[in-house]
Length: 241
Image 1 (spheres, one colour):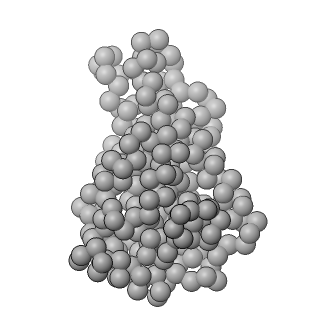
Image 2: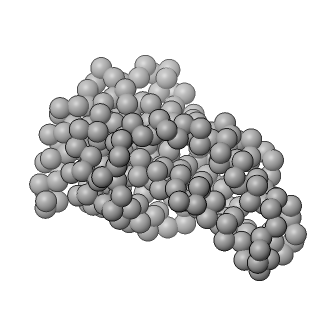
């Protein structure tokens, strides 16, 4: 598909599945906005911890802050995806997952996604989106259970905290390098980044975040594809898959 053909396809998919009656009530949207702020704060702490790996090793620090472990275990990772489900966005992904994911490209993704990831502390959000797009093309087009597979990783919140705590409490085989810690932090970062993009996607579509360009159904589906792929990729990294 060309860029224009892909947007036309996403627009038709949105017209079929994305429906206004699924828009959450104003108070629920306000809570979702607060949860997005919470996710951004946690993500920035994770990115800071990732950047400090070498410094922490040299100082001999014992592990990540206990407060961060608690926040990870309680992070509202799936609230945005639940709202996307209510709006019919996940249903759209289920209906045409092969076409959506294998044809995904940067031009279809709202620029606001870059801004969300930047606010989340991601150093190079454009690069992260490029990597996620390639992952989506290779792995998500043949996704076994479609968007509903997200249900299988609902317990990822305590797992993020548990695996991170264990990585810091287990002495590495090579004290000069912390690859396991870095991979786990990378995975957690992708999960949080996907959750932030997904939550922001809903808020944009519902008009609760001011943006230069109003969100469209086509952009919402492309953004959702990035959000889902990022969470699934992060879960794989977290588990060493």
